[in-house]
Length: 108
Image 1 (tube, rainbow, N blue to C red):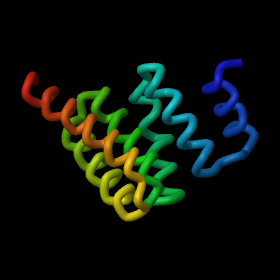
Image 2 (image 1 turned 30 degrees about the horizontal axis):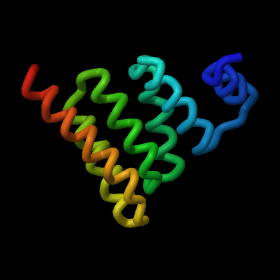
Image 3 (image 1 turned 60 degrees about the vertical axis):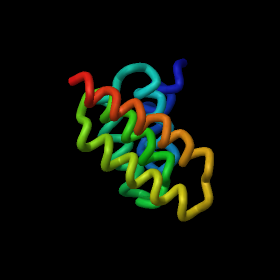
Image 4 (image 1 turned 135 degrees about the vertical axis):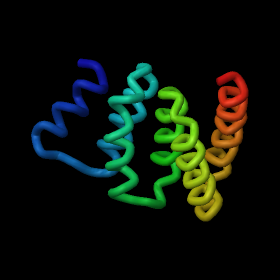
């Protein structure tokens, strides 16, 4: 059973937490299903507004959906919380995707 299906099944069974929503959102973005991912990633940051990785993947989802203002806001939050926690790898990933965002905005 694919990861998305397992996570959705857990959600259907009443399990709901940060890691489940984050994992589901990330899996959906990786499967080019950004629109479906956004509500799960929004729920993840509702569970923990300082979870930098959830903000990062939310930014990626918005970027994939070409919602550039929302993508920038999510990346800004991801950077802020990653820097506060010393998560340098997340900061580097945000740098990469902010460059992609700027490039996409230049081509729109």
